[in-house]
Amino acid sequence: MAHIIFFSNQYTRSIVSDDYAAPQLKPKKERIKRGKDEKEAAVVLTNRQTQNNDDELSVAKELDKVRKSLKRAWKQTPSVDFYSFVIDPNDFATSVENMFYVSFLVKDGRVRLALGENGLPVLLHVSGEERERLHVDDRSAAETHQAIFSFNYDMWEAMVKTMKEQQAIRSQNPPDT
Image (spheres, one colour):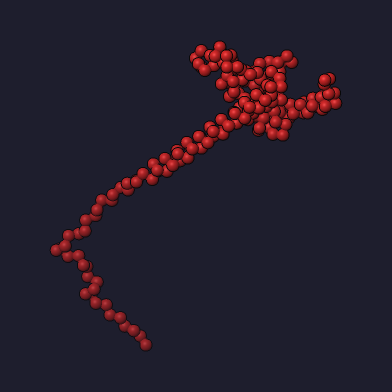
């Protein structure tokens, strides 16, 4: 059985006639950014500022800890050996951080770095009067000396080894009291 389908021309003719105008194409509007990027940038900036403030607080806390440790050490002796103070025999990174914090205390004029009797650097306390005399608070008048020294993992290992050997020698030969 065959099906026959008839199409009427009535439905296939064009709908457009001369009476109607062709539709006008509207110009495409540019998308306006609503400031999402600006908001995101503000959030990121705020997060960075918060993180920077947190970092500054943690650095300030660490500086305070180092300063207090130095004060305790100065009660026992007027000069503290730089390397024995900053070297952490268990962690190279902590040793580097300790040097970093001590350098801030030196820069701020709270600690002075000098050569000891054995030619190695020592940390000395800077009194309030000495700070005034050296004009530490007035950066333009302050006398400054700068030095850069290299420090790497191999040096740290050698220093730790030397410190352990010296400690072993001291424990075998206790000082006379």
